[in-house]
Image (cartoon, rainbow, N blue to C red; front, side, top):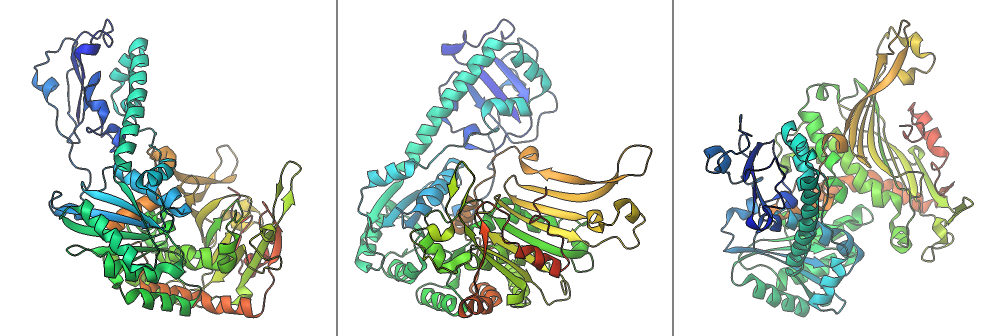
Length: 623
């Protein structure tokens, strides 16, 4: 990659320390990360104090850094255009002849404001959306385009991380350039000042450009007449181009079918594709889920329905298949022969926060276990797919889900958090929420043991835990391996043989990481063993900001990539695992065990772990 910094006439003296007499310097560097803040189309590269151009081609092996190098020299003048970072199938057609219309149904809701619009903005500043696109908010609230823009602008932010100009220079360039900059304090100060000013201006420009693409149409979710008005507005923006339309249903499930009907009949594309993203929950049990699927399929085909589970878009969930199938060291161990148990943990350190009415209707098992955790278990435990094609991966997930035994009540612990005061602040209990009944039996915590009846996993307990108002926020997978047969060093661990076991931890959040616990000798004359971690901490190894899960899932839906979305038969198999348990809990009116807000959860979870000879500790949070 070649990079050129050239002073403009308006700032030649400003950026001219005594040792910086030549007009152009060419500095070799490694690859510049692809972010909007460092792309050539930013305002920073247009008529500013200096020009930054980059090429992602093979780095130059040798470049002259001599003062006074002639500006006309081939090395100094050659500036390659950056190659396109990724290929987007949607853009196969001529961008002048096609357009993408994204309709966010329920645009004034919390999900749309906090997640969907910010994710679309992030894709926009990363240049991942097609050239011609339009975003329409649709909802029952009456508002103007400008009012919608004011609402969503409050949640839009530009990313600032180690990919900005100055830090890129310090991280990627050779030490001679770093030494040069650091020894010219005036140059350094002015450089930072200009970068920050241009960042703010560029951020404002990007935000304004994005908001100009956003419009609003009000109407009822069941009104075909109102959707016809939306269709007319869409056609006006599409201007006769090939139109593809993506509907995101950020609304309650009982409105899905009505919106699908109206969208298909009155607002469907006449010459392109139409896709509909639906948010969980997908029903309350097997029968209601099938009924919802039947309703949607009256108006949409399976290929047009994208059932989104945003946790499937997390970076470490995506990395799970890479870890398994591209590392020889792991796949041979991925079976009952070497793995003693697997734990899937999802804890939140806050309560229902005013969403008591919704949560009381579903509970923690339907909200987290049946979809989020079960989907991750399916990815973790499935056999090797024929290919990375979406259908091949989903076929394997369905196979392993159908091999799971329905969860039994004796293998489950349910709990509900109660209020607590720590002397400084009081935390309300679940039933203190005004929207929740005082005698509600809805669990806010659940732990369950699940078994898979196939040759790979027979007899291995898969333990799931999910809860609200616990002592920490964490989502992780913990794989505990079997003890070494005839271990020569058992005596060095005393009676606690569990401390000698290897453990692989995949932490999804916070601080994404993958680490392996191994045994090693403590340096010294004696024979003393210790447990250490082979640790991949993402924020240390990869300083760039990790994209939000909604960004990945939205771009997949736009491109028609279905790998991370749930197929109808997969959904049916997932509900079959939990529906018998849910019915038994409700019919027997099982009272949840109370636990204190901010604690480790119900005591019963430790008895459940002991029943299956699992070292659960403090939910595995001892790290």
